Length: 114
Length: 112
Image (cartoon, each protein chain N blue to C red):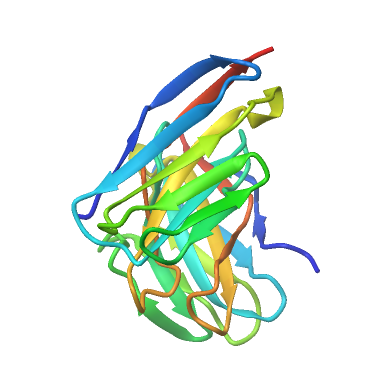
């Protein structure tokens, strides 16, 4: 049973470009969470999705950031018109259908904006 | 917003020593979790605590959920070089799925 798969592991974008980060949850997991980690800091919650639904996006910046978890395929975190401050590690976690079961984290995507 | 204050920020200890780190919050959490993160990797769950006052062990690791639900500590006994990494506490509210609030981390360095 493969773990949470994130790709790419590393992504370099120039300012103004778009970044697309992908997350394939563990098999049987229908809940996906995205977190952002700035250097030397803890993870900060961004968005919680179930298949085809955004449940909570209270941690997501209001502009340029969007997330989806389609019926088929991975969850996508999309950052438009990236700026230097978007440089961070972005982690995805997934959990099974039953709530309050601990989530498993992926290895993250390290985004560098140059 | 909510914050978890984790201390110490870093520790440099001798192999074989015991380690203690803690986390405090201004608000109540119903679950406390402790994670370890190695360089370039995602957090890995070490211990989960679900009841106030609960004391749980996982090998050389012991963690406790504070009675007030506003704090937790993690102890590592007889540290070894592979304990090196960053340890994070995280809190979760009721009915919050896995939307976690993380502490700032404790960076542990072990001298052989």
